[in-house]
Structures are given as structure tokens and as C-alpha cells.
Image (tube, rainbow, N blue to C red; front, side, top):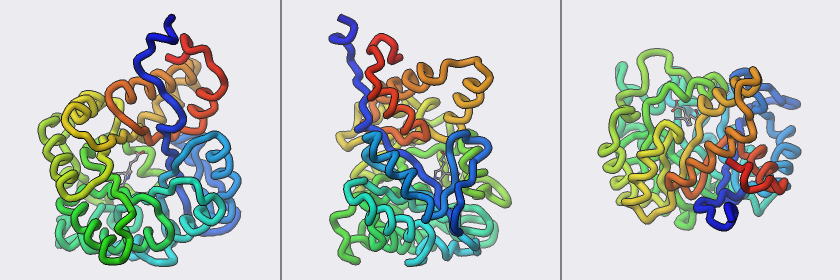
Length: 316
Ligand code: PBG
């Protein structure tokens, strides 16, 4: 009876697995604050991705850590950049896997901000051109979806125009539309070495306290041509997801971010939480709040647990 009356059904179809790539050979570097996650060199990536595919996870999101960082984030739109290399390899090995490219400058800039600077401020409009060029270079490398995470105003329109002009009108945009200035990105910034060298991201990421502003950000991105809207982080923002679900017809994504992952991993390692039940409960809650898809570092585990005929009563 409990199985029949279940209102929210989580399946691996909803999962997107974030993957970090870096230059070099033979690299499988553990990320200390994200147990179970690694930085991979492209030559080591095939086994990891084949596991993802075998588990039935339909999509990955690629993040790159370049060899060198500079003021303008030149590595981001380098046709032979690290993410572009990884995309070409993964699409060749696994043409059916959906490959999503995160588009942002913070992993590539020496100062760690998500855009180019003018003095000590991020120059919104000058950044748009860099983002558009990054999106095009990723599409050319085989990205199936472009996901801008920088939070500059007007980037969705700029990217849409650039993709269309370059002959990639079929490539959709998944916009990190409601992205908050959050403490939960800590482990990711360690993994991607993208902590800002000065200041913080509050001039472009949103205030935790605001939900009406999130609706406005999402409406603007939808208007500019976004095909999928994202709320990030997920767990502390389920109300934002719920409001977005009521308001927008577009598919919604939620990013269960690095800090949310690290909390569960740390408490589970201490024996304070049952990892499987906790992760399934969190993922189900994110779906229940309105997400169609979840970006999560737990994706491989989740897919395995969901496949392994776990009695429905145990799933939350
Ligand atoms: C880049 C970006 C960040 C994350 C995804 N893309 C970090 C940030 O904005 O500082 C965070 C993901 C995570 O914490 O798992 N802008």
C-alpha cells in the first residue's frame, strides 16, 4: 500500500554527476573535503565515466582546473582547454551520455572571480563576451548542454546569440538562475582552486534571505532563452524550488552542492548518520520540492541504491 500511494518517485533518470578534470597523465587525485570524489586527468577518465553510464546515470557536468590561471581566464575558452579535451574524449567514448559544460571563469582566473575585473570589481558586461566564447568552444568540443554558473546579468542572452551564430542553435542552456552566495560551496572551491583571492561573490550571487529576487532572476533567464532553470544550493533552498515549480513551466534542476555532500559524508563517517537513508531522503525531498533533475556528487551511489531493489519503505 505504501508503495502504491507514494507521491514522489526518484529514479536515476533525474541524476547528473559532476566530474572534475585537470591536466596531466595518470591523475586520480582525491578531494579531501569530498570523500569519494576525485580530480581526473583525461587519460584516467574512461573507467569512471563507464561506471556512471553502467549505473544508468544519464548525464555528467564537467568542471575543469586548468594548467595556468590568468586575469581573463584564458583557459576557459581555449579550444584545446582541459574541459574541451575531456568533452571530446567522453563524447567519443560514450556518445549516448549527456555531457553538460559548466560555463564560468572562476576556475580559470588568477583572482578567482567569476568574471573579468575592472579595478577591484567584476565587470559584468565585459564578462559576457568571455562567457559566450567559452560556451561556443564547449559546444564545438561536443557539449550537449551549456550551463552558465557565473551569475552575470544578461549572460543567457549573450550565450544564446553566440551559440546560434556559431551554428549551435540546437544546444540548450541550463541556467544557474537562482544561485545564492552560499557557504556550502566551500569544498568545491578547494577542489577547483577557485576561492576568490579578495572580496567575495556577493556582488553577483544572491542573498540567502531572498526568494522574490530568485523568481525575478529565473524569469529574466527564461526570457533570455534558458531551457532549464536551476536553483543552487538545493537543501537550504527547497522553498525556492517549490515557488519556482509553481511559477515556471520549464524543467527545473537543483544543485545538491559540495557542502551538502560533505556534511553527509562527514557525519556518516563518524557513524552519526545512516548514509544511504540520509542521501535517499535528501534526494527525494529535492524532487518533492519540485526538481526534475538533481546535480549531486551522490549520483553514482544513489543510482546503485535505487537499482538495488531497496524496499520502498526503506527509501526515505
Ligand atoms: C562556479 C561554480 C561553483 C559551484 C559550481 N560552479 C562555485 C562558486 O560559485 O563559488 C559550486 C558547486 C558546489 O559547491 O558543489 N561558479
